[in-house]
Image (cartoon, rainbow over all chains, first blue to last red; front, side):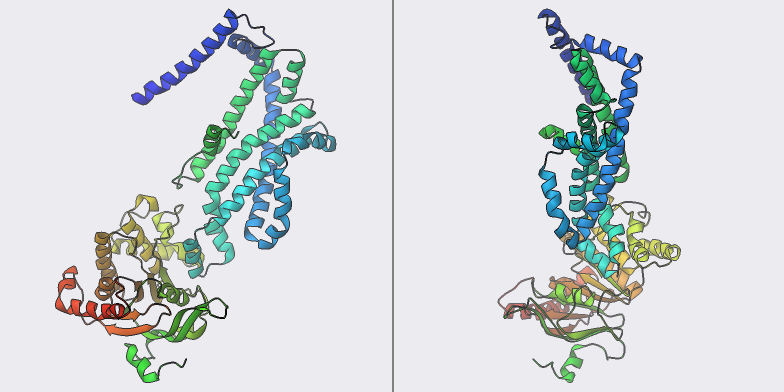
Amino acid sequence: MNSFRNATLRVLLMLAALALWELCVRVFDVPVYILPAPSGVLRALYVGVSRFIYIENSWITLEETLLGFLAGTSLAFLLGTAIALSRRFEYFLYPSIVMFQALPKVALAPLIVVWFGVGLPSKIVNAALIAFFPLMVNTIAGLRSADEDRVNLMRSLDASEAQIFWMLRLPGALPFIMAGLEVAMIFALIGAIVAEFVGATKGLGVLINTLNFSGDVAGIFSILFILSVLGLALNQVILAVRRRVLFWDASQKSVTEDTRRGGLL
Amino acid sequence: MSSPPAAAREARSGSSAADSVIAVRSLAKSYGTQPEPLRALEEIDFKIGEGEFVAIVGPSGCGKTTLLKILAGLIPASSGTALLRGTPILGPRRDIGVVFQAPVLFPWRTVLDNVLLPADVQRLDRVRLRAVALDLLRLVGLEGFDRRYPWELSGGMQQRVAIVRALIHDPAMLLMDEPFGALDAMTREQMNLELQRIWLERRKTVVFITHSIPEAVFLADRVLVMTPRPGRIAEAIAIDIARPRSLGVMSTLAFGAYALRVRAHFNALGGLDA
């Protein structure tokens, strides 16, 4: 009963904020190239969606994001595992990885477009690059978090290192890995959009650029709305997988919730 | 350091060499390679017979857990030998079951799958052992819990699952390292009764490590008393109390006399109470 009331209150609050926004724009007669009213954004959204422009470009951005996510996280998992399991790998690889990590990866976007062209590949590479680090760091931390007692138990059963990895280290690392995937998914979307800003012919980033040149601020807002829905949907997919995989984890907490609250994203 | 004469060694063991499951001879363990290495264990000698329940009791830091890890093949001894059924323990052995202080269950496995972990690791017949597992779970009063997950169980129940897991592959010996140390006093007494019941039914050879004198005297056929670092075996006391023992036995004179005899070793060392 109470939770129902709170949920209604939440929606009402959002509607009230939108109404206030609409009211302010109308009362103070804010120019549409500075801040459009919500009704204007809605209209732009309707026009864009009904002409299929938004759908087509959303699909392209989604494709770039997912492929980049897949490439970046696969590589991150493999490399993270190698580093976590082998001191030699860590010794030779980790310093350069850390140096690379300190670099703001978005700054590489212009170079990547030069190297990989204005098409799909450069977007995938950029998205993969940005999605790579959160998962790699978490994979290392997760695989190394195996409880000493559990390792001793496995050893006492005469388990091989491979068995210890598959039966203990990997399942035990899943909370970390899922948290890394959650961040990586949002990062991949950022990477795709940034690459589209720098040089592309299609995608939501390109649309934002075009609308910006023509001064269509309402259009930009409508794209931002689509991006936010897209990000939310991608996050929900990861959360659904997480709930399935980590049914046993007591700390069923989402990272993005925490980091968003902390303002990290 | 020479090992004690054979006669003295024989006196410490309750059985002859022939039928002993465990035979430990002048075992020592030290850590570090500095000029003054830390001596954890010295001149450990004992034998354990088939089906015998032996408790090793000593104050914290006397090397009890080190001894258990050597017996489990998790760490090597610095010198001396430990034989299990006549063959030296040089690494982890598949014929040993270990119960640690914490239940050490895997939260992503059900109770049944946790119990069958040794079967998965050692690639044993899962179908046959599944029936054994369900039998054992019934024996420890966990019938119907096989599909539950560890977090749905209380601490005592989790430790019972750990005991079943240690028994599932029918090991020659059960090593228990303060298995009930993390439980509250009431649950601990329950678990002592439970363990006695399981032992009376299965007659496994048990090495039970504890720092609780009453627990050691209550459970064991023989109590080995260890001194603080470097750990040595000060005395081996045969506990001649009829089984099954009820909790009431703890307030008998005989029980008190045994407990006092164990405690005397610690008092002599400066009043270390368990």
